[in-house]
Length: 354
Ligand code: NAP
Ligand code: ZN
Ligand code: ZN
Image 1: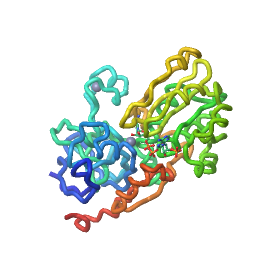
Image 2: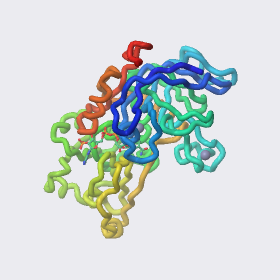
Image 3: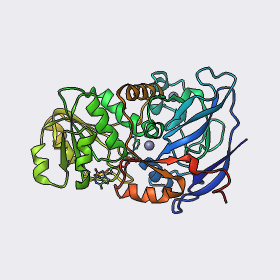
């Protein structure tokens, strides 16, 4: 077994603390990666605090992983020691169902294996990227562009693909007015990507202080969502809305901003359902309300390649792992500019472990 050092939650109410555990030795199809950076996603908090139910403890969160390959199994051809590599939210799936066959492993009919808080096909509970190494089947390992700032690439593995996938699926592009709700980790990637796709982006935020950043990131307009007059000016104006909010909120307010036939896609997954839907706001203009979950492995690679081509990375605050609990507290208060990334060099073998 492979000795590993990470930070884990021991229960839904305890802070993250150093934790020693073991991973499987790399098998024939596996890639062993020394983790260099791991992004901090709001889903890490939802899961470690058991806000979605089904939490498995101890839990080492983290699914925005970039690092360097240190070892590969005999059957692996796509990676070799020394390569950069990335791992996102999934480390396995059934690979035979209709969704898997289409490259949509995130919708695997048997359920994909999450990077952490899941049971792997090796029988072990999976543990994530707030740690110094990981062993993953090569079919779920991404090639990381060498031309981008590596620490700012990490958040693309979840925040990037989760926003790229619906923007592509609903064919967002030039001539469209696209709303992004919430300027956090997902939201700021949605703004960058929708702008790169040629859309006119309107950012909806609860934080007045994020106005200038939103314009810098690529939004053409910024609306303070509490301001009823500003909201009224957008009524019926938007072709598409990507809603990234991590807390329950009134969806009707945003549905009313869609044009006829417009679509709002939810990617934020709060711990409670929102206030009741007004069905009339859908029917009156033949509007759509939809959801979307991360993206498949093939599309994640496409997204990384697109970001390399267009020089797109995340805006990050780099932290040592010892500051993870403070970072979570700030993220929950919507005070992150715009993704925390853990510098795994701070996790010196032995120095942290109890
Ligand atoms: P985040 O960095 O905390 O960003 C969420 C943003 O939502 C905040 O920055 C804030 O933006 C806004 N917000 C927070 N509370 C709000 C409230 N009460 N009312 C209105 N707006 C509020 O979180 P994240 O990492 O981007 O994740 C966002 C959500 O997506 C989480 O629920 C996460 O679990 C989920 N997620 C889903 C998928 C998927 O596959 N569907 C993948 C990854 C994450 P402003 O300050 O601009 O208002
Ligand atoms: Zn995530
Ligand atoms: Zn499947």
